[in-house]
Length: 259
Image 1 (cartoon, rainbow, N blue to C red):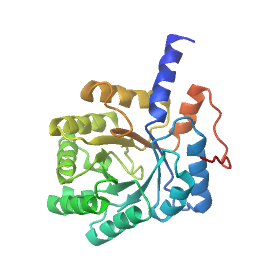
Image 2 (image 1 turned 180 degrees about the vertical axis):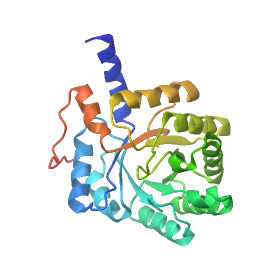
Image 3 (image 1 turned 135 degrees about the horizontal axis):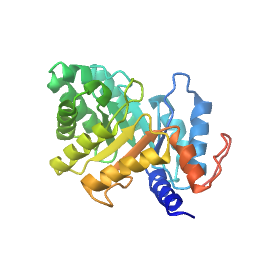
Image 4 (image 1 turned 90 degrees about the horizontal axis):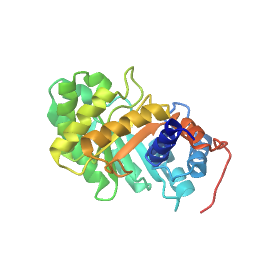
C-alpha cells in the first residue's frame, strides 16, 4: 500500500468513529430510520451517533440499544425560529424519549438582528432541559452568519449559554460547513477554555475533505482532542466513501444486527 493510501485509510479510521449518520428528509418515515440505524450498526466503528427527527427517537433508541451508537435528534430545525417554548418542548421530548443528544438551531436571525438575549435564553433553557447527561449541540448556521467576526461572536455566545458542542450548519441552506468557519469556531472553543466540542455538518462527502477538517482540529486544539466527545461530522453521504477507503462493502438497507 502506498503512503498516500495508508494516510487516507488512517483518516477514514479516525473519521468513521466521529460520524453522526444523518437523515433529516421531509419524507422520512419508520422504514427510513430503521434502514439508517441498520447501516450504522453494520459499519465498523461504532459510529458516534445517528441524527434524526424527534419523532423517531423512541424507534432509534430501541434499534441501537447497547450498540454504543448514540441517538441525536434536532430541535428548532431547520429554520431556527424564535419560539422559545416550542424549542424547549422539543428538547424535553427528545430527552424523555431516550435521546442522548439534541442538535438545536440557534435563532440566528434574531441574533443577527441584535437580539442576542433571545438566542442565549433558548440555548440556556434547552441545556437545562438536557440536564447533565444529554449533550446540547448548538447549530449556528454559519452560512447565514457570513462574516468571520459574527461566526466567532455567535460561537462565543453559544458556549457562554451552555452549549456542549457548536455546530456549523443545518445542511438546509446554500452554504453549509466551510473550513473557514470551522477555523473560527475551533478558535472560539480554544479561547473559551471550556470543554466544548465542534461539529462540521453539510457538504462533507469524502475522506479527503474529512481529513482537512481533522488536520485543522489537530492544529488548533492539539492532536488527540478530536475524539467522539469533542468532534463530529454530520453527514449522510460520507459513510460510503469512508467504507470504500477502508475496503468495507457498504451495508444494504435491510442489514440487521443484534447485540
